[in-house]
Image 1 (cartoon, rainbow, N blue to C red):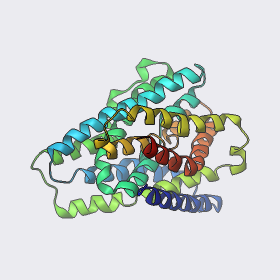
Image 2: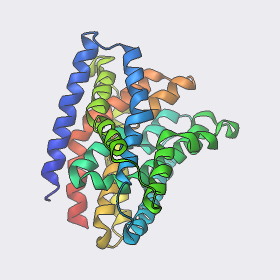
Image 3: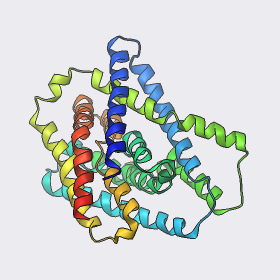
Image 4: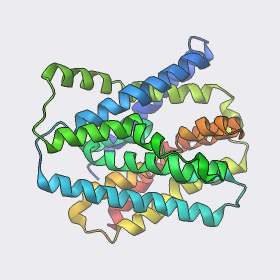
Length: 304
């Protein structure tokens, strides 16, 4: 239970930062173009910087083995969502399926994991992030288009986060070292992840009346599935993993329990789906997670 207080404080901090984004957008100090550019900056530079710096450490064979285990656990955790969403949603409920399966691993997952376990934990979290990227740009794109030709392995490989992890692994597994000043620059850029991520999410909430979020049964069902049912199924799966991997188990569980991915809104807009509905699912699950993430974490520690 010693991780509960840092978790609660981090979630409170994150929602206060979201309030800043909400205020800036409502007062028209930020517009859609500014938000778009901030989002691109986060995805292209800030989050990759966090990932690269997490690998700047002395090579340790046990850590490397744990990283492999983290990949395996991440694959199964996301697969649980894929199977479950395929069962409970109809074929045409594309947005609901996507919102249920894919979590906001980078924007919300990274700040929470850092608060709970420290910056070093991003090393293991990177396994989930890369797994997420691979599945979004393969299965996720196929889900949205029903066309295998739209699936792009190139986009998986050229994704800034994938490149960051590859660079990180090279630095971790070889004698190569970056100059200290370069490392400091990466760390400085990476330190912007939490405030910028939350401010961007806050602007999403400001795009429409918050009260409208609470009027659709669909959003409640999506939130229940994304924030409670899938985490509960993940807890059951991880129950069979030895507790010597407790930190890995909690990292995978928490990041598989955060709100729906921002990618949902981006792809909905790109492929002609209801962008407003997609944004509402992200916003509603983001608001609801302040209650569900602590609940899931406490329950996991009780069961395990």
